[in-house]
Image (tube, rainbow, N blue to C red):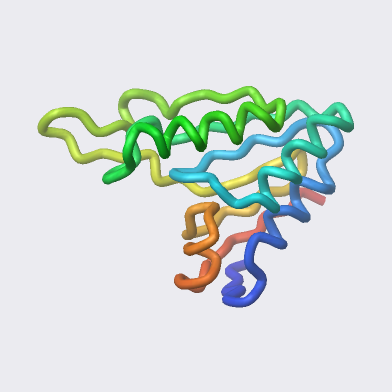
Length: 133
C-alpha cells in the first residue's frame, strides 16, 4: 500500500523501530533525525540488534557533517556500515545509495525522503508499508 503522509514526520519510522523485538535494519542516504536516532538507541538498549547503512559520500556534504552523522549513529549502539562501493560515487561515476527503508523481522517502511528534519518538513514523503502476517 502506498501512503502519502505529509504531516506525519518521522513518526511512522519511529513506530516500526519501536515495535521491533529482534532486529532493525535501516538504510538511508542521510540520517540526522533525533526522533529516529533516539528510537534506534532505545531499540538497542532493549536488546534489539540494530544495523544502519549510510552513504559514505553524500553529494555536497562536508566531511565534518558526515563525521557528525557517524558519531550520532554510533552513539545509538547501532552497527554502522557504509553502502557498498557499487552504490557510491567515484570519479566519472554518479551513483548514490539512495535507499530509504527501515525493516524489522515482519514489517518494512520504504520511503522517498531522507531521514532528516528538512525532508520531513519540505518534501511530502511517499511510503510503502509492507507487513508479513
